[in-house]
Amino acid sequence: MDAERWASDYGRFCEATDRFYSGQMTVKEYKGISGGMGSYAQRGAAKGMVRLRMAGGRLTRERLDLVCDCIERYSPETVHFTTCQSVQLHGLDGDSVKGAIRDAQEAGVSTFGSGGDCPRNVTATPLSGIIPTCMMDVMPYAQAADRYLTDMACRMRLPRKLKVGFTSTLENITDATARDLGFVATSEGRFDVYAGGGLGRNPELGLLVERSVDPSEFLAYADAMFRMFSDLGNYENRSRARVRYLRDDIGDGRFLEELKERVAENLRDDTFPKVHLTGSVVMKSGDGSVPSNGRAKRQKREGLFYVPYHPIGGDPSPGKLAEIRDCITDMEDAEVRISPNQTLYVVNLTGKESDRVAEVLSDGAPTIFSSSVCCVGSTVCQVGLRDSAGLLGRLIDMERRNGFADRVLPMMRISGCGNSCAAHQLGTVALSGSRTIDGEPSFRLHVNGSHLLGRERFGDELGDIKESELPAFFEAVGKAVTESGTGSFREWYNADPSRLDDVGRGFIHPIARRRACREAWRRPSSR
Image (cartoon, rainbow, N blue to C red; front, side, top):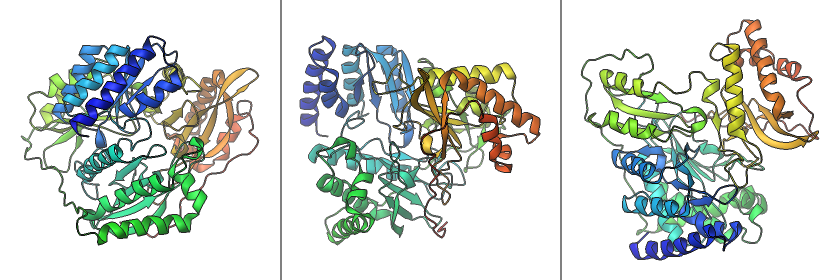
């Protein structure tokens, strides 16, 4: 975005923010203006949030400094990592909202398009280029796509948001095959391209558009998807204004034909940019030291390590990022990556450096269950239905009281409503905010979802459980797994899925239609 355009939009935003926080503008009116600048009012309309755009979840030293400066200057009540790899600052007054957005822009960290009818933060495998199991380093492609799409959003209109993701591992942690547009790296260093997917309500897995695409042509697909959605998307009904509904409206065949023709037009145009990118080169070498902390993992580059850290619910204490920044200040090439599962990684460390970092990060989630993915929930979110964050806290308390061994209970995904901010449809075990039962709030139980490449599937919806009874339900599951001697929920469930139904008797309230999982298309592996 050029300086003149940004200044104009920011001025309009500041005027709206002043009016909203002085009670002169409704939540709906303000949302239509603030969303595109990366800010939303929180529940109660007394405080707001700012979403800092971090393509691929990469926090370089400069970006980490900006986030820390904003936290120190504006004192947010909560810092939250999103499943789109952004950083959210919550509990800000109107002046702080305006200040954080201005400071971010001046530091080269855009908030534009982090909300509203815009391309959202482009996601990427966070350890791309770091771990040996990556097919290729997709981080520079995600960052280039983010810049390109943000620039397009300054010139063209979209009916609603557009989500783009890149993945370079079989784990597919970015859910690239369930995005509006997804790029899946292959072992040959090329991309398989998918489109028309999406989570949220009425989720869909994407269609395979093309195999083995030359990476230099990836912008032709991003441009084509943007223009197609801009031209054909539904501007009359916001509930139908997503790419997956466009696919429903015109049919899969025409959807693919339209997209491919627009790609072909771009590739025939000699002036359309072909971008040749390489991953960032880390010159740092190990010093021969070996970690003693037990948490550091080996990187692809000999002698270097990374340390994972999962703050409960994706909410680090507001001062934690400053602790990390201060710890790595003198560590060459060390930086931070945020994962779509809300785990933070500090990368490019020697063994001794990893020990120092691990000590700073010793307050992270100690078990798989406590590292569950969770949205901010209804106490903060304007559209949230249930208090997902509060529920996660009660479930972790239950796990601690029982002293369950790690992996007895699974990592979950908890969305406070059907909007899938925690990607609950693809979780091994997941919960989403649901109806009231006997006047009490409940969550829907989803099981056996998967985002692994070639095995993507949305989980079965087993029924609804009262929120008040969920700790007792998972306590019963934990005891059943422990007594079985299998050691982990996954082994216990895979051996006999009906065991979960047995434990759930008395807890699970039937729903009108049990929605069975939908498996991905069967496709030969190109990896």
